[in-house]
Length: 251
Image (cartoon, rainbow, N blue to C red):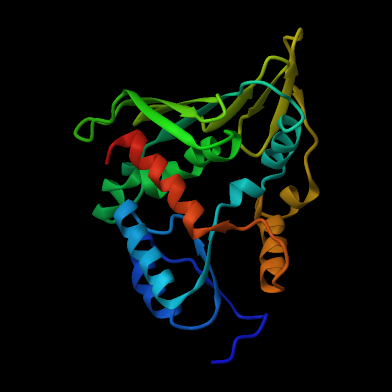
């Protein structure tokens, strides 16, 4: 099959079906966009990467929260501030409320927590040098999980999760001069030093008229199809986030 700049296939199937679908799709010279996660656990993700290498496929992964207007605003603002960052991510999971296959339940931190854990990748600078589980994952009685993440830049991350209990999905970034908060993740606010008040940052009509993040991500897909510079998340980068999930939960 001759490749054209319009060849695109989106893989949006159940987590446990991604590998079998990718095995067929990667044989064709298409650009593939996989709805996250690209694999229901770390080992499965590596198998998918092996297929991509074998067939020399162009594969990207859909992390739509990276394209939220809120996320992009905070990323733009924190680039202007020097000094150490404290990144705090808050996760809440209650998988048994949903109807999913056993393999998905067993790997829920990959299948769902990856949504918020990815914020530790995009807000922290440099390489992750150490992940220290403070309150460890207990699969037989899921409760609280807390981990410290250290970066080569000197930034510090804290991941806090509550399982089978109420809590928010949220992310914050704190520096000496400003504090940013995404809670809910679709909305961003900022608190300057000396103030006790969070000021909302402007929203974007694309995140009101479409599912947040998807319109901007679609623009990046078009750039990739035209072989121009783009901001899609590569399969390798996706696996880096899955490595972080693995290190936090030690599974």
